Structures are given as C-alpha cells and as structure tokens.
Length: 152
Image 1: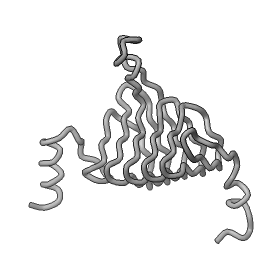
Image 2 (image 1 turned 135 degrees about the horizontal axis):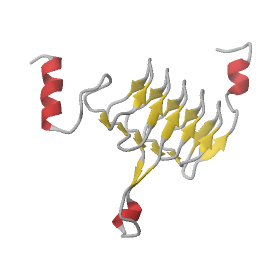
Image 3 (image 1 turned 90 degrees about the vertical axis):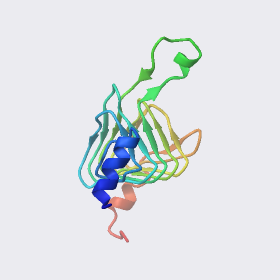
Image 4 (image 1 turned 120 degrees about the horizontal axis):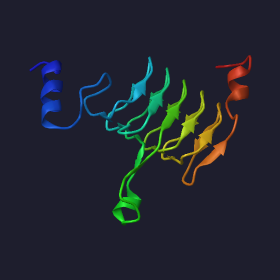
C-alpha cells in the first residue's frame, strides 16, 4: 500500500479529512490556511461554523488545538448551543507544542506562542511573545530583534 492509499483508507476509517499537512492533523470545517504553513501531527484546527484563518508562513507544532468552539455552557445547561468565535493568526506566527488557541483569539504577525500556553480570545499585537496559563503577553518583544542590524 502506498502513502496515498493509506491516506484514503485512513480518511474512510476516521473523520480526519485528507489534508496537505499530515494524516494525523484533524481539520474540521473549512479554515483558510495560507501558503508555506506547517502543522505538526496530532494537532487540530476546528473551524466548524466559524472563521479560522491562518496566515502565510506560520509554523504550528504538534499537539496544538486551534478550536473555535466552546461547549461548556451547553454541557452544564446554561445554553442550548455551542458558542463559536472566529480565530485569526496573521502571517509568520510560531505556535509551540501543546498550545490551546481559543475562539476569539487574534494573533498579530511575527508573534511567538510559547509551548503549553492557553491563548484566550483577545487581540494580541504583532511581534509579541505569549506564554503561560494564564497567558502573559510581552507586546513588541520581537520588534527590536527583527528590525535590528545584528539578526543571527
């Protein structure tokens, strides 16, 4: 069995649609994913009933959850439906392993989301370093480094 046959069989046996990244990347809905994007295995991009946009040249590590849906209010009977919010990653965003990006998040270009971070549904400025739970945002952290003459 060649790789293409394996991907087709795997898609038939699971709800993992065939994608350009890795057979173990779960893409639900129809996210807009730019050029030169890398998504590591065991990651999910859930855009069902919301807009999820990932800009060009983003690097998303393994075990990352980009999920527009929040069902906790439905589960505990405070709502009759699942809440869904858009998610935007501008271009050149790095997302480390084991990150959760929740609905409503807007991540500015040239930002880094450190491993293990839970990104809340807010707007994060470009060139930021975001880490932790609760998340800590260092706005403009990479601006001077990217614009300096001594890039390494």
